[in-house]
Image 1 (tube, rainbow, N blue to C red):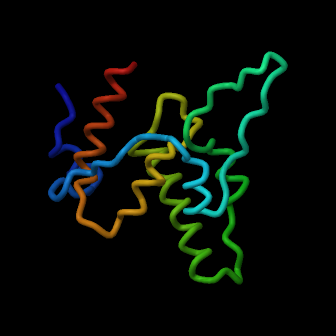
Image 2: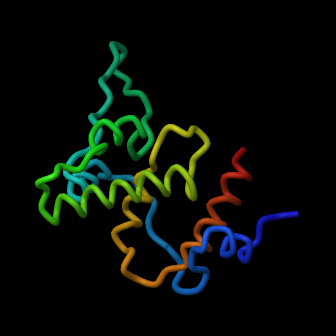
Length: 138
């Protein structure tokens, strides 16, 4: 047995028709791009005494997201409200549909994908492809 595209459609109600959700997964400059989208990004890790940086996934930890975006200010303007909504959607899809194996990080590429929500993309197909990829990598 396997999960099919029809299963994804029935369970999640995500669209399975439309354009494929294709984008570059290149993480070059992701912190700068994240700051442009949501106004901030996680700090770079400090360099250890040996001069080597720890390898950090391109994205943010869920604890960082909660610490910085838990509550939208009551007097927020439309731009700030949209920023908080984008971060909330990023958090939700990174925890559910596009969860990674660690359960600790929200990958940058899904925040980037939320910039193109206005178009008719097949999010269900993307979810199924991501699920298959995660199963293979286990």
